[in-house]
Amino acid sequence: MPRFDVDALVHPAFSIVLGSDGSFVFANINEALCALTGLTKAMVVGRTATEFACAEDAAEFEDNYRRCFASRKVEEYEETTQMPHGRRWWRTTLTPVLDEQGRMVEILGLCTDITARKLAETELHSAAFSDPLTGVGNRRRFDRDLDHAMGRAAATRKPFSIIVADLDRFKSINDRFGHGTGDEVLRQAAQRLRQGMRESDQLARIGGDEFTAIVSAATTGAVAVTMERIQRQFRTTLACGGIAVPLTVSLGAATWAAGISATELLAAADGAMYASKRQAAG
Image (cartoon, rainbow, N blue to C red):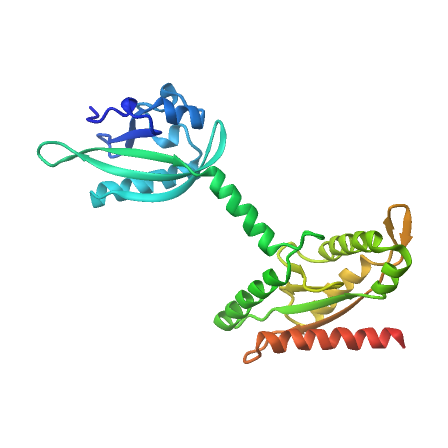
């Protein structure tokens, strides 16, 4: 029988006992936790986590309970769960409850709802790394992703490539149609660039009309195929508020090799893009 009455607590709480088969059985859950999760005592009491939670959540629950039983110490951690009232984030504290002989008879769990904080953190993180106009990554995101890609390549010796895309004659579009249309051109250009890439490729806007992508293509042929796929996306005019806007894009690429720095790699791709732009201009 449980030794701690969680129903007496105002704070969201539950208690766990070790079943005869070594499973972790919920001895109780109080009304405060039921109200937050949408669970009921009938759904939880006398059951294991696998009987009311999704398999992934249940496995994590039981890993934490197992660690607490093994250590006989207070365990504190953050977790996220999918419950009837939706997904929530928690700061959970597990406290071992001992009997008079010092035997561990149950775990008391206290849950603090941190969902609002986690959602705010996610929103802040997204804002910090996203371009607000186009929704793709910004320069800070590109720099971070490039740093990670450089580290992976150095560790695995598996190369990757950078593609730089610059919208042709974008200033004249702004001058002729106005900045509102120019902004819409940037949004649609980002969408078309995204459509020309693999799902795993990482697109960012790093300047006014300049975009970069970190792509998995690692040979001259594979990079050429990727750039051709992107160019195909720009063979039809853009429709911007009833205005048909023709738009082309200049591309350049560079592939990672051992010993090259991130700055050198980006400069090489940028140089290739400007060479392509000059060639197209005749």
